[in-house]
Amino acid sequence: MTATNHALSGALIGAFLPLPIAIPVAFASHFVLDALPHYGIPHNKRNTSRSYRFIVFFDIFFALCFVASAIMFRKWKMGILGGVAYSPDSTWAFYYFIQGKNFRIETRNRFMSFHNSIQRLERPWGIYVELTLTAIMLPIYIQQLIK
Image (cartoon, rainbow, N blue to C red; front, side):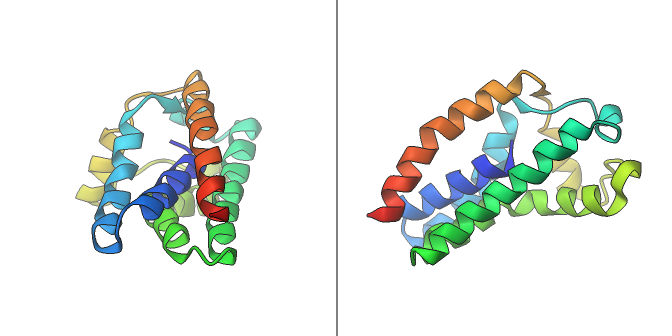
């Protein structure tokens, strides 16, 4: 799932649930979303695909913008929980941008192995699922932001 959808879902969880409960729910939402069909291309093509790197870069940029906008509107809980919902992917993003064209997914521990194992439904057509989720969550996010 894209960082944008993880951040939006975490922010919405923060908008509707009380804080002690919202933190583990936002974290768990990451894995629920990753189990759904979502955008992805074969790992061996990610290293050479400029369009994939472009999408990943702007996806992370938009996710950070949503988190920052929540904080700027003093919706701290929404911003923080958007980050919590995205946080499991931070390891992949770190390795992806540091290793550049030599990137390979290597599971370094049980957590990363579990996280990688639920990513079975990454497909190019998953972008339509992603865009649909964004189209549903974004107006609710904006409504909660300006509320």
